[in-house]
Length: 91
Image 1 (cartoon, rainbow, N blue to C red):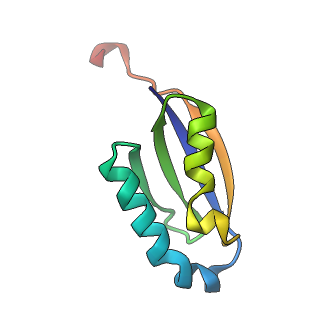
Image 2: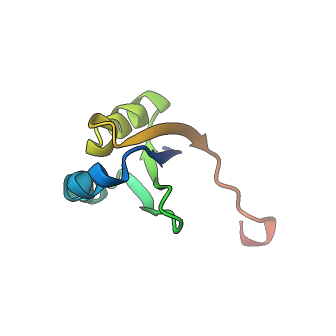
């Protein structure tokens, strides 16, 4: 299992409000399946971040691309594998 950071850059703030309930419902479903480590909006309103837990980049891409915000072109997806670093004194 690896982690993938989905940066969701805001494209259409007005339409974002309309799509937001479907986005949250979608992420709640994935959260219950154990597919999300963390999620939330950026404080400056420029978008948000979802950290997916997946077996491959391809799986994470499928999950991220099915997000209503991405499907409806409200936010632009940037997906990257995220290597979690743990300080040696906490390992």
